[in-house]
Amino acid sequence: MNKTTREPLFHISRRRGIPLNKALGIRALSIILALLVCAVVTMLLTGDNPIDVFATMLQGAFGTSRKVWVLLQNMAILLCVSLALAPAFRMRFWNIGGEGQLLMGALASAACMIKLGNVLPQPLLILVMTVTSIGAGMLWAVIPAFFKAKWGTNETLFTLMMNYVATQLVAYFVIVWEVPKGSGKIGIINQDTQAGWFPQIAGNKYLLNVLIVAAVTIFIYIYLKYSKQGYELAVVGQSENTARYIGIPVEKVILRTMALSGAICGLAGLLLVGGTDHTLTTTLGAGRGFTGVMVAWLGNNNPISMIFTTFLLVFLGRGSSEISTVFGLNEAFGDILTGIIIFFIIGMEFFIHYKLNFRKSKKEEAVS
Image (cartoon, rainbow, N blue to C red; front, side, top):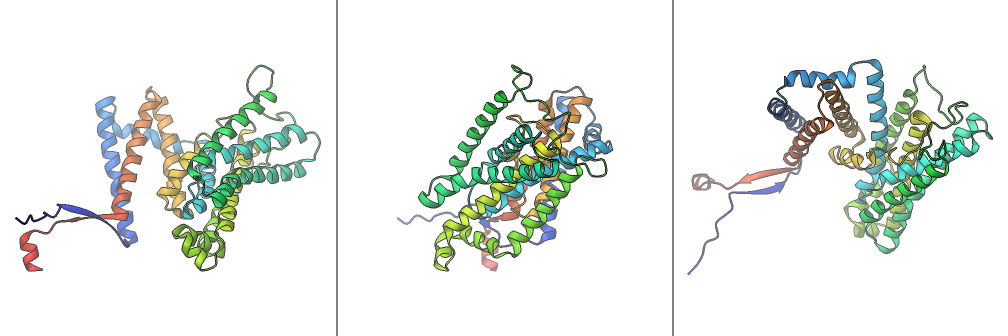
């Protein structure tokens, strides 16, 4: 007795390509649907007018010039870390160690400010801070890259482990350098002399960070799209065997790409310590090393797309804090709204890269 297999109702296939206007339309639809769901959730949980809640989010991000500059500063640091991860991800090296690499760069900056602040002149001190911070981040990334290139170790677990080691190193030196003794924190470094503090441009301490990250964005875009090194890491990401067959030194590409990734994360640590915060804590990165993974993924490792993704995430974070303050809600409610919006955005990415193919009816099969 022959059994006929019934074709499933639908199956999923990967799209070969999608027009830009259609992709933008899908993303716009995801945001509209997310806002509608957020409005319903707001009315059910709080009874507040959702329009007032959304207006408060805008006020939290753009209400004053200072809020705008804080938004840009937060965007700059998150984008910097995300840009660092993009080359590694394009190479299919899953660098989850951005947080640790940032902390090592920050630790190097703080060490220079504390130990050399009264020894070196300001321009030379900033130069030494820059070199050591970039070098520290680079070292922290090259270690797992070396083991991956030589012995094929799991880079996800290795880079994640390096985060914890970096956090404990920072915790140790915070106690060594704590001011006052017993406080468990460093406080503002060189507050009286401002040794190692970045100069302000037009009286704004955030502008220099924004300009530096803008330059890094342009560099990474050109590096990935037009340089020989960007081509090589893309080939390695597609197939290491193919890369070796056409003469690309895979081990060298892995080490070089991760050195670049760690260097930019170290730069982010420098921008935080020397540019804005002027202190060192184990939470200085504020989870940006992990958030940067989401930014790079949503932006498809494209630096231009990552700018908009970074803006969205930072805007939601700033807006959620403002909601909690104005409406007297705990911070969890703002996080709920943020989570809903991100859920819809990530969900709609599925329809950009994949499509649902439904089973044809008997009439359609007969016509075809």
